[in-house]
Image 1 (spheres, rainbow, N blue to C red):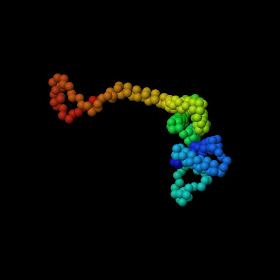
Image 2 (cartoon, rainbow, N blue to C red):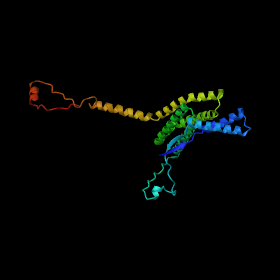
Image 3 (cartoon, rainbow, N blue to C red):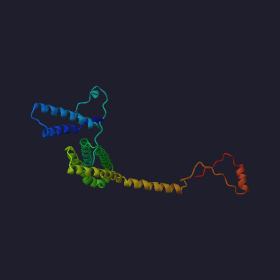
Length: 261
């Protein structure tokens, strides 16, 4: 695994906001004015880096193409690891895999750009659930029809809402339209997260029914065979039934233990 660090773009927005506000409300016609504006911009940039630090992600290393130079350790005679062949999928499943990769990449880009911690956590949740949904279908292509609406409407509409939120949030402005729209999107994201979770759960409905049926059949068979609910280590003493039973009991050794199932 490699660790990739992505820089936050918000400190740059802070610098742009400083210059915009300075040009609107403060003079910019002397060299001293530009120097002061630059100092304030630097302060805003470093403050932004503290408030919104860079983020890092662990990613799988990309396999080197054939003919590319080998690492130094391999050139020195160390045994090189054999590259695993890339999986091949049918065309429809390959399109689904490509769409998963694009969706996860877009979720991460939006997460880097949006600073709100609650929205960021919701994006993390949707990203993870989307990957699990598509992976489940890749493993069982027969489930593809179950996520048709998810892929054609719910996922792209969610991306549209998040992009609209990102554009309005990046303006740094406040107003009836901006704040109202952002608030509606924030409220909607809770419902979207729950819907994504339900979509994932529905993919395992058939397996849950099969397992429930197997459990019911096994319980019935165990009951019919007398194997359910009985203590196999219990000892049942022989019940007396006349003098013959009493003599047989006396003749039996003390350690004669019979197991009753």
